[in-house]
Structures are given as structure tokens and as C-alpha cells.
Length: 181
Image (cartoon, rainbow, N blue to C red):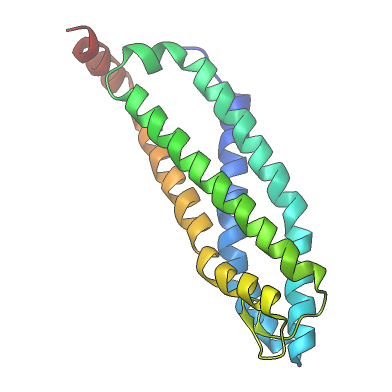
């Protein structure tokens, strides 16, 4: 088997940043924004944090996708000939598509919140009673979705670990024998 260091690195580093950044923002930035001192400052701090993360997240996702395509191309023979690799690849593709969809939807909601500026909030995803209805609705949806992206990308980390295990020489030999046998 040939080495795919560049594509594997793009895949793994991109996924790590996508997972870790969204998890850190859900765990730390969103709740910490409540300590900004006022409802308006809370909204401003949360918006500034997420707006700074968005371009980094876009680069991370792009790196992951480029690396994923490189991995798929580099392992195309195993995908078609080794038992279980095709199914794992479909599972990774489905998880990636779901994570991309939720990320895109969350960003659209985040834009609604961010465009409002210093929207009054108790914390990033908890609007105050003074928040406009459309913004409050977006924040409440984001409150639920903030955990979905890390859950999906975390599942991708697990499936990627399984994919790495499938590349062990014994697994390749057994998988090829089962597929052709």
C-alpha cells in the first residue's frame, strides 16, 4: 500500500479542528459569554467569538473534505475489494454529509443572530426577553444544535479510528479473503 500522509493529515487535522472548535465553543464560549456584564454585551461577545471561529472552521472543514477525497482515492482498491471497507466508507460519507448539513444550518442561524449585533442574551444561545422574535428563535435552535455538530464529528473520529484498524495487515488479508471467498 502506498502512503497517503498528506491526505490523511488533511483529513485528521481538519476533522480535529472541526470537532474540537465546535465542542469548545459549546462548552466554553457560549456559557462564558454570560459573564460579559450585561445582556447586550453577552450577545456581542458571543457573536464576536463565533464570527472569529467561522473562517477557521471553514478552512478546517475544507481540509477535512480534501483529505477525505484523497483517502478515498488512495484506498479505492480496498473500498471495493476488502470486506467491510465499503460499508465503513458509506457510514463516514453519511456522517460527513449530516455534519456538513447541520454546520451549514447552524451558520445560517448564527448569521441571523450575528447580524443583530449586540442582541440581548442571557448567554450565547439563550435570548433575553428583549431579543427580537426572529433572533430569539434562531438562538433557541442554536442552543439545541450546538451539541449536534460535535456529536456528529465525534462519531466521525470514531469511524475514522475504525477505518485505521481496517488497514492492519491481518485485517486487510482477512477482509480480502472474505470478500472474494
